Amino acid sequence: MRDRTVVHRLYDAFRAGDGQAMEDCYAPGATFRDPVFELHGSRRIGAMWKMLLAGGSDLEVEVTDITSDGSTGSAHWEARYTFATGRPVHNVIDAAFRLEDDLIVEHVDRFGFWRWSRQALGPTGVLLGWSPVVRNRVRRQAGRSLDRSLGDG
Image 1 (cartoon, rainbow, N blue to C red):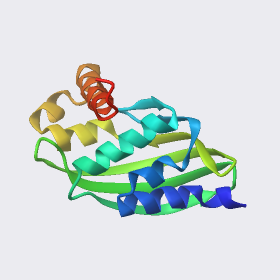
Image 2 (cartoon, one colour; image 1 turned 60 degrees about the vertical axis):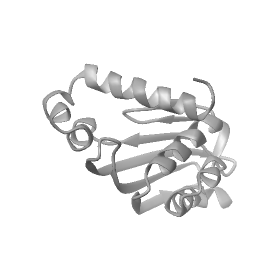
Image 3 (cartoon, one colour; image 1 turned 135 degrees about the vertical axis):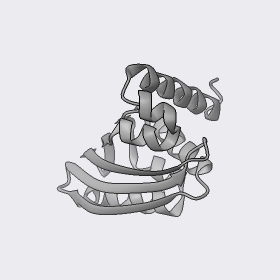
Image 4 (spheres, helix red, strand yellow; image 1 turned 120 degrees about the vertical axis):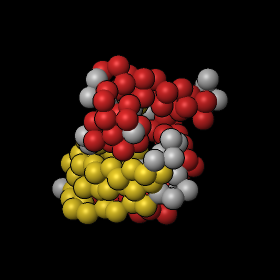
């Protein structure tokens, strides 16, 4: 059954910097959610990955513990990169997937937003990274960047 490997294909494409191959792992009506993004549709999800790949010239991705039973999957991955602020980030993520017909239909990435914000935003993240105000500001900025990359903004 091929859908047992779609999670592997996603992360192989991520490590190769191939955003289109990542997009191709998602069903047209797929959903993606993490502390920053909540996306619907493979086009928007693919655009997010392409945007992140384009912005991270020093991006390093390490993936471990990939599992899949054909209908669900999971992975643990870590990303190291320099954020737009010039600050180094080491993000530790646990991913969960729901799979159908060899495609990802639901993808949820979990990571500590406050931990991430302390690294990415520096003093602002240390003092306020736990607050909804900072999280919502980061979400709005990321959403605007994604819309621009899609030509929607």
